[in-house]
Amino acid sequence: MAAAVARRLCVGLWFRSSLGQLAGQGNVSQIVKRSLSRTHNVLSIYKLVVVGGGAGGCATAAYFGREMGKGHVAIIEPSEKHAYQSMWTLVGAGLKTLGQSQRPMSSVLPSNCDWIKESAVKFDPKNNSLTTSSGKQIQYDYLVVAAGLQLNYDQVKGLTEALQSDPQVCSNYDPKYVTKTFPALEAIQSGNAIFTFPNTPVKCGGAAQKIVYLGEEIFRNKGTRDKIDVLYNTSQSVIFGVEKYAATLRNIVQQRHIKVNYRHNLVEVKPDSREAVFQLLDSEKGETTTFSYSFLHAVPPMSAPDEVRSSPLVNADGWVDVHKHTLQHTKFHNVFALGDCTSLPTSKTAAAVASQFGVLKHNLSAVIKGKQSTHSYDGYSSCPLVTGRNKCVLAEFDYDGHPMETFPVDQSKERWSMYQMKAHVMPQLYFHGLLKGIYEGPAMFRKVMHLGMGEKKH
Ligand code: FAD
Ligand code: UQ1
Image (tube, rainbow, N blue to C red; front, top):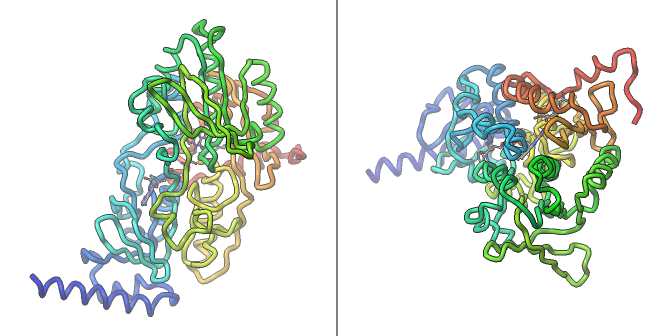
């Protein structure tokens, strides 16, 4: 027994030192595979390892699995279920079910890639290696990180307890709590309906306010609107970062008597007295203000997952540090990243992931062939701002906040057609295009739609 352990340790150390020497020469996986079994239970070796089986991870693994062939790509993902999170806004409003947003992970991960059903817990990019939750060491030639975001409930005192114990506290951002939203919207008869936005970057920032509009419409349809004050308490100082769409949204909140309290950051929930405490972010004295609530939709603070945040891959703010145009890591040239866990200074959405994937696939392919990155990500992101059960403002923009609209109509207007896109077309693009690594965002449609008309001026 002791001998076996010692042998394994020696083999492990030999692997490490050989691979350390080979790192930088490329094709570590091929050279090592000639002499060592890949199925060794301490160390596995792949040409490409993808961390995360969400939107960005699935697209990347599907594409490179096809390119590299069976057994060369591993995808590390602990969850049994994959979720199309964009649908949770409509689940919260009672327009779709949670089940419609979910698929078994096994059905969305590409079959020619090895699924390692664990978390990546330790990253050692200097040695082209990472460790999984069960202690497996995985060696790679190239790494793509697409680990998404972590929801940090513990940063708001009492929030977990409130979500678990109070039927009137909910969150569309979590499959555990999204199914509470619609019953709570239906149950409230009077008092404050409060919707929050935290003081951190979040995924799809628009989703925090889409449910305000859908909720307000539900109250009107039920005849309870007159007795309910609808409050959107946001840490931000504007309603939306791109002025063209912000102007529409300001009109909507004014016309529908939705009170927006800017620079209000939720810091505590008291489920026993149904009170929510907000830090006033512009107060020099750090003052707080307390609201009673009859309904609370909470958006928790978010960050990259802890395992990623504690790795050498991140910048000072805790995001995987990639070049904003090439998506290649700033320090480790065989590492790329896409999606919510990255430092990319754009709005964190699946729409952005699709465009990023289109750039990443070209640039990683070039680097694998020993060439330079050639494609450039322009920061494209999109947010379908659902403003009612058949209305939507389809915001699309780049790094500079310039609108980049796909359709030859003014997308800052509320439209039935854009709601149909959101509810019926986007899920198809996501499941049958993005997850299969064949959809790279709407740039192609945009070119076709604007044929002969010229691109719309910003
Ligand atoms: P994810 O899709 O979240 O995937 C990350 C994966 O990494 C997860 O499967 C996770 O289990 C895994 N993981 C985490 N840590 C580890 C680890 N240590 N090791 C291995 N695996 C790990 N986007 C839009 O474009 N349009 C919308 O309308 C829209 N609406 C939204 C509404 C809501 C309520 C929410 C919550 C999101 C919405 N989004 C929308 C945002 C969109 O869902 C995300 O931006 C997108 O899923 C990001 O993709 P990703 O691959 O970066 O992360
Ligand atoms: C999009 O491409 C996409 O990716 C699948 C989404 O994810 C769910 C979106 O929500 C949006 C809005 C887009 C943008 C697509 C078009 C056609 C404008």
